[in-house]
Length: 300
Image (cartoon, rainbow, N blue to C red; front, side, top):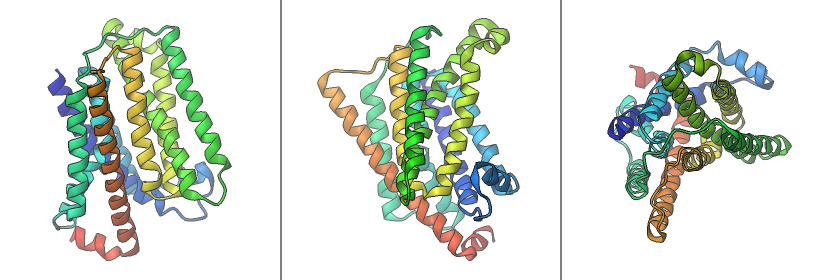
């Protein structure tokens, strides 16, 4: 089942990577007249590329949910957050070129970090989580952190990258909670059927956190480039999910001093590789926006 979960998580990561690139390209091209969140959404819903990105995001979410149902959150979530790796071969194929050495180096760093982290942590399968006070408190703390980061983002003036960073933190916490809410919702569906799922609070918390995460992403994409928000989003997402898996689902990783050191270094390598990949992805998007001939050549 863990191998099946890993396969589903890899497919979800690849789909998320493509979806993110498409959405960012659409949002970054929004005119100044599209003011505020409603104005931005009004512009985006009329963009076919953005709608395709949302469709791909939906497919990725279904794969993600299936992976979480089949395996531990501590295994699935690090794979999903490393999905930007898949954007490198996809973009190279579309542009009919070989990936650069810098791109390959970033891919290797991220992939090795992910592989070592998964092997070293080797978390236990875990147990079903309760919907009682402990779970509610964890969710409330996560929401409080997201609200605090959003307040900090709203108070930033004249520094769009710093603003986008805080928005990335908001998105990371919310998407980390989404992973937990998905697992809790599917747990209720599996144990008590559709009626139990529809009367359980994680089902509605999932919707609220998911919508909040998507809207926060659109704001971050509009404010600054991917490299300002996505590293924070991915790292915070992974940390939130690992804490959630350990606290609520009893997914206990290896935790001797040696293995904790290895896991920390591996997670750091993942973070560095993701940052490098996101910077490269951002550069390619800027190049395509500045030179429409790139997109024409690619489609021709």
